Length: 422
Ligand SMILES: [Zn+2]
Ligand SMILES: [Zn+2]
Image (cartoon, rainbow, N blue to C red):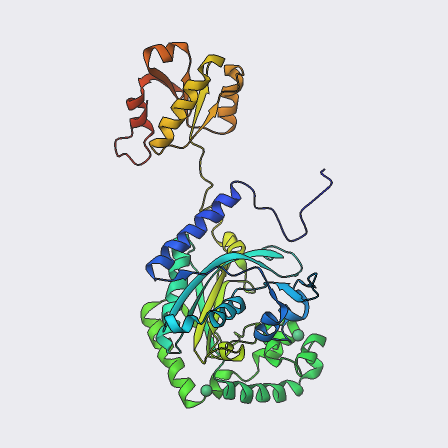
């Protein structure tokens, strides 16, 4: 065993696995392109306050999951635990409102949370996310949810369910929190220690508690839907109506709250049967007060993120690593230059290949081709050079044929309709 190992919860993404990440990211990019979202790349390190001010002091993320430390100048900095806070920081810093009435952004990258590592829950994990900044109309929430749905479908996720709830406006939420608090105060003996503390810090988090006692209490609790003001009710019903026409698999979920303080109005979670009830593959919602709260303009915004590692659990086996292309083998040491030339010609024609020209025995070169599960091998030696035909071996069918380069191309050309078997 090697002396050094990767940190717990921060696994290497090895060749093959990385290729699947790449495919997922590309499929997401295709959809973002169609919806006209632009990519934004923010740094992985920020001043800690960017996160504490936005996500909230009394959240699990800020209380116990952030990687925070002082830099050499004594500044308190943190690895980003999520994407939205940095994006809003950038939106304000660069005055992006001036150039865009409505700004549609996406991001892809690693996030960091010191959680207890378990299946689908890592300390360095990867998210694909999107934000629409600049308006509060429910039609924007619909556009965002449709985008999340399209991204997941393009990646190949099936059978997911979209759960929807609303947190109302600040006034609704304050009133609801009071009502919830007084309900829970009568049930303190049935609550876990954490939730008793949450009564005075962040009472909504009781909905996220996994303890059985708390779950039973919460099932009887008042729901925020009954506390909405007229305006919030109309806009939520508007949203539900539009979603039911465009997205079939959407479901009202009164138990849904989010673990971050900045959410207001409609929120959603996308779950998949392969992950169990507790783990969403995607989640998001509206955060209309965040930009102003961080010192920026008063603009509505909404966003979501997809956890790539969670996603991998939901598409088990559907994506495969890229297959290796052709192996060009030098039969003798003198053919090395010709192997280089052949590889060049193949690559210019869009065919992926590697060379085996280390001057080893043909047997060991063929063993490599088998180990790498190559479908095709091209052999070059004295005879081939003289005749300008090359030995093409189809490893799968166990066939071989001497062909000029143009004929080899016809066999190997990946998108050609007339791909022949040798
Ligand atoms: Zn309201
Ligand atoms: Zn609890």
